[in-house]
Amino acid sequence: MEVKTTVKVISVVGARPNFMKIAPIVAELERHRSRGLPIENLLVHTGQHYDEELSAVFFNDLGLPQPDIYLGVGSGTHAEQTGKVMIEFERVCLQKRPDLVIVVGDVNSTLACALVAAKQCTLLAHVEAGLRSFDRTMPEEINRMLTDHLADFLFTHSEEANENLRREGIEESRIYFVGNVMIDTLLRHKARAEASQIRAKFGLVGREYGLLTLHRPSNVDYEITFRSILNAIAVLQNRIPVVFPIHPRTRKKIAEFGLQELLEQMVNLIVTDPLGYLDFLHLMSHAKLVLTDSGGIQEETTVLGVPCLTLRENTERMITVKKGTNVVVGTETDRIIEECFKILDGATRESCPPPLWDGKAAYRLVNVILDRFGLNEDTKGAWLT
Image (cartoon, rainbow, N blue to C red; front, side, top):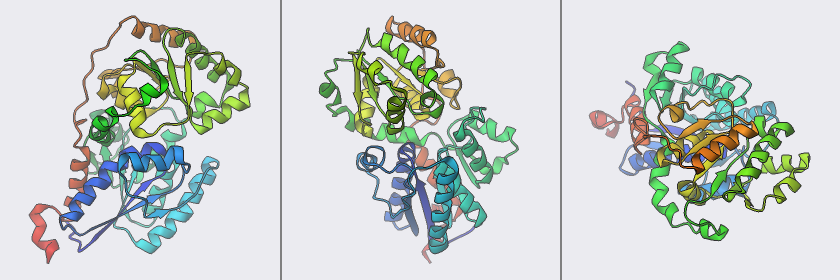
């Protein structure tokens, strides 16, 4: 066991899904620092998502401190973005000399910072390790697989993820089943989200509405697939209103494919800019059903008990199908409509939160880190002297 006088941690965020995952970890590290543990935690924002709607508003909603370092890499191809992050993050690591780098999720920033840490022989922790869709056409699948094989700490959210890692030959000593940090954030902010007036703003009553999110290239970069999904929404919105917060990438494709007229014909489709975390959580908590291609939303709806239809051919979060409210429906118009109408006609699924999705994942995760550096209560004397 290594005992450090001061442990320097860099926590990395880059894109919207990262913020909900890193927030409870940063808060837990700060809690330990404030009670006297010698921890220096720097928050680095790569700038992969860089506009107000996808980034800054989340810092406010989640109570995240402003980033200590902002890399500002912006958009680009996968190679451009990954390369830019690596170049900029390497400079940070050479200057700050961290003892541990924490990356979350599966975006380009995750892999880029993992590569830098590994090449500098810096300890690396991957939060949300072990997720697999078994679809290597997904850029996220490549990112998560490579990051897992580089990491020293693989923090998982399910036994299913543990099995995926074991199957790939990763040593048991690197795998830590701590639970789902994203659910920590949800449970912490659920009461605050209840105060949101977003339903009133959109004129929604009770739970009689659907919620739609779309952003994955496999859905929005192909006109035939995109139209197939929207044709199903056109039918659904005849029965209940559907709220559609549009991701900037999705909005760009709507214009490129000439889909604006199709959207305008849907009188019960409520199109809005991306929403902050609290407003979105409020809408999701009260929705009749959620349609999405997002991974995190599959998990959140499972805990909330809200029916979720995943608009993909696969999911890396099969636990939400086995234990939760999630149904993977693909992108064919008729299948989506069929599953929507089942829910509207009263079909329900028994579900329960998976083990350790209890709001304490960050607590368990940070304790593993403290143990590694000799900063737990058993070694208190060592680091105080």
